[in-house]
Structure formats: structure tokens, C-alpha cells
Amino acid sequence: MSQDPNQPWSARRRRFLQGMAVSTVAATGLTGIAEEARADIDVNEIGRIPAAQREPLAQAVKGKVYWWDEPGYELARASTAYRANKPNRFPRVVVRPNDDQDVVAAVRFAKAHGMQVTTRSGGHSWSSSHIRDRVMLIDLSRMQSIEIDPKTRTLWVNPGVIGSRINSELAAHNLIIPTAHHPSPGIGGFCMNGGYGWNSRLWGNGAAHILAIDVVTADGKLIRADEKQNSDFLWAAAGSGAGFFGVITRMKLQAHDLPKVMKVSAYSFHEEVVEELFTWARNLVPKIPPYLEFIMSSTAFDSKTGEPSPVRITMAGLALTDSEADADAALDLLKTCPCIDKAYFHVEKKPTSLEERYASGYAADPSGFRFAADCAWTNAPAEVLTPRMRSIFCQPPTPHTHVFWFAWGPTKPYPKPMALSVQADVFIGAYTLWQDPAQDAEMEAWPVKKMRELDDVSVGAQMNDENMLHHPQRYLSAEAYAKLECLRAKHDPDRVFASFLGLPYRTTI
Image 1 (cartoon, rainbow, N blue to C red):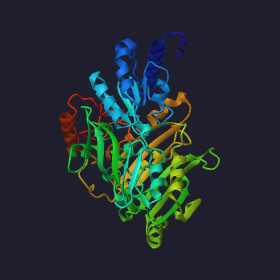
Image 2 (spheres, helix red, strand yellow; image 1 turned 120 degrees about the horizontal axis):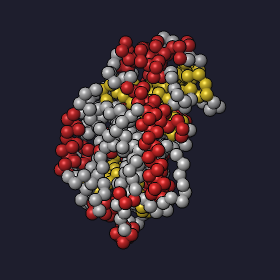
Image 3 (cartoon, helix red, strand yellow; image 1 turned 60 degrees about the vertical axis):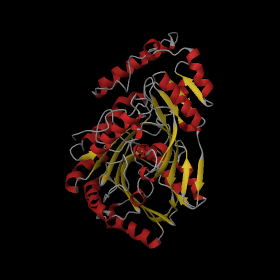
Image 4 (cartoon, helix red, strand yellow; image 1 turned 45 degrees about the vertical axis):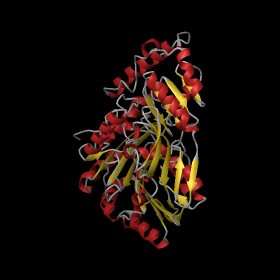
């Protein structure tokens, strides 16, 4: 839809959104997408806050403030999402605080003016749930403090600090924490959405590593929450993600000794071995030691040239432990694959580093692409799960599209009470990557279509890699969701914080 540059700014935006809403519905057949592509925003309807009423916010916040009709706003809004296809949702104001007191001032202002609040740490949520219409978006990216206590193996860190930077600084003390496998997610979003990272099968999820938080409440108060005080907030922070009823400004995390041995094995196959490969892999899950990360992935581009190529299925294992013998024995499990002799590429027991692993994660999801995602947890046995794998893994709509299979099991109870409450033996995630905006509708629908093929065997999904708007699944247990909503009613009765973008709990699957 063409736009007249002489039209008022608000009218041009409204016409753009109307075109997006019509084209998305027509192309995908999806309903209920009012949050995803609003067609009814204009300045009068949203309610302009006069300059005189805006001024107190600018005076109270030492950081940056960008109102939605002022210069710099669109760059501030768009930069809060990693994906190139920015959602067509528009906060009323974006605030980039410098410190805790800026956050306090921003929340108090939002409450006084009837605005809901969302928070962004690193912006890697594929649904970009922090970008909402009419809200105050608090972007924590300017707060970048790390305080390490080597004696207790703990650290205090702002949520917007990226995981790879944290581990880089921890390495000087021979320490490590689980972070996202990609180098650039913020530690806040990673931990609060569960946090399945380095050696999490052994050490636990990122959520389980949260020892304490400093949080600004719905009343605009800065409090400390740990197991002895304000524990409701600590429980909710560990797994509620966008459903959290506060703004965390600092987190205290538990670190671990850096493993002495880090080795990787990888084998790539053509697609004719899919059934044999996945049957073996699913049956292997109960035998995988907790210090071995075992994955299967597919893509269709040449990693050296970047050019399209036939579908490549890769199985890989990463051992993180203190014993060469344990690492080698764990990686030897991969060689029990019955089709191992059909691998056309292999690397065996190669010493590696965290920097190399972060680089590998970035290569899978590089910046500059448009992204869509969906995922599922499943306990389905091989005879039920394997027949679905060819369709899901071998039909990518673009070369860089990839599907990811992760052996999380054998599952064990989460180590402490927390909102995080859904898991299964196997995680499967589908991620489309593309660059042409004309493909948006088709590419955004593809992960949902593929994960719906698992609906009858899915026990739920992992927040941040989900598609809650277009494919609601179970992200919290019934008990955890009920408790979260009770705590929200207690601590945020006026709904100052916007909560989930979509439905976080389905009673039936």
C-alpha cells in the first residue's frame, strides 16, 4: 500500500497498519491478531499526553525518553527487537533508564498516567512480547553493571547485560553461568523465561540460578527479593517471563567452576537417514549423561559459502566436564548411531571453547534476518515421534530456516519452587529465517504449521521460542499459572504491568 509522505505522521502509520492487518489475515488465515497488527491507532484515539505533562518524566529520568510522535522514537522502538521484522505494535513511550531510580520514576509516571509497562532486556524474544501498543516500554540496555564475588561464586548483574559478556568476565575467575547459546540475549530474559543454556542438564536452568533480585513494584517501590523476603517476586521471576509483575533492575546469580574439558563431536547426513537417525536418537535419550548436550538440527545452506544446498541433518554433542575420559565416553555414544557410516562430514572429540560455541550459535541465527519461531516439548516415544520428523526437518521454506531437536531428558524435578514448571524429554523448535518482506506472511506461518503437527504429543512449549499469539500451548503448569495470577492480583491489582502477549496456559492440548 503506497503512502503519501505529505499526510500527517499518524495517518501514514494508520494506513500502513491497515494494509498489514489485511494482508496478514488473507495470507495466513489466522484470527485474533489485533495485538500483532493493529489497524486502529491514531494520535487522537491513543490520547496524546501534552508536553507539559510529559516534562516531569524527562526531568525525573537521567536516561533517554522517546515519545511515539517525536524524533528518534522509531529507532528506539525498533532497536529493542533482534529480528529485522519488527512487530507492528507501538508503545506510547520508550524509556532507557540509566539506573534503578530512573526505573522507579518511569513506573511511577506510567501508573499516574494510566499506562501499562513492559520491559526489555536483550530483545531476543522471537514474539517481541515487550513491544505493545500504548504501553511504556522500559528498555534496560543502558544498565550494564556486573559485580562478581569469586569467593561465593556469585554475581550481581543488570538484566540487559548479554550472556556472552558475563561469561567473558567470569572466565577471569575460572567461573561460568548457563546462558543462551547465542551470544547476544540479555541475561534477564534468558533466566526469566526458563533458561536452557550451557550444561543446564547438569547445573539446572537459568531460572534456578536466580538467588535474589532488586525489583521495582507496581507501586513504584524498589525492593530486594530473595528466599527470606518478598519471596513471591523471586518465585515469579524464575520462569514467568513477560508475565512478571515488576521490573527487575538487578539479579544475583549463582556461578559454577568453569569445566576443565569442553569437547564437541558432530556428524552431518543427507535426509535419506532421517527415520533411522531419529529413532536411534529418541531411544538414546535415557542414556545421555547430564554433562552432554545432544542435539539434532537441519538447515539447507552451505556453511562455507552461504549458498543454498540440499537439506543437511546434523547431530552434535558437546561435553562439558572436568574429565577427559568422561567427555570422550559421552561423545562415544554418538558413534553408536546405526547410520554413522553414512555421515558425509564429521568432527570427533574436538577441543572447543565457549567463544567458538557462541560463534556457532550466532551462525545459526545471525543478525539482519527476519525471524519467526514456534516450539514444543514432547515425551512421545520413537515410534510415535519419528514419523513426524521428515516433514518437520526436511522441508525448510528458506535455506537458513532451521529446526532444532534437543535431548533434555531424562527429566528430573526442577530443583526449587519456581514458576518454571513445564518440561519433557525432547524439545523441538522451528525457526524461519528470511530477508524479503514480501514473504512475511508465509514465513511467519511456517513454524506454527510445523509445530501444530505435534499438537497431539506436545506437553507444552518453552517461552521466548514460542508463538503464543498464533499457537497457544501450555507454558506453565495449572498450579504455577494459578499461583502466578493470585500473586499478580496481590502485588499488581491495577495491572500496571502488561503481562503475557497471548494465552500462557491451555487446559487442553
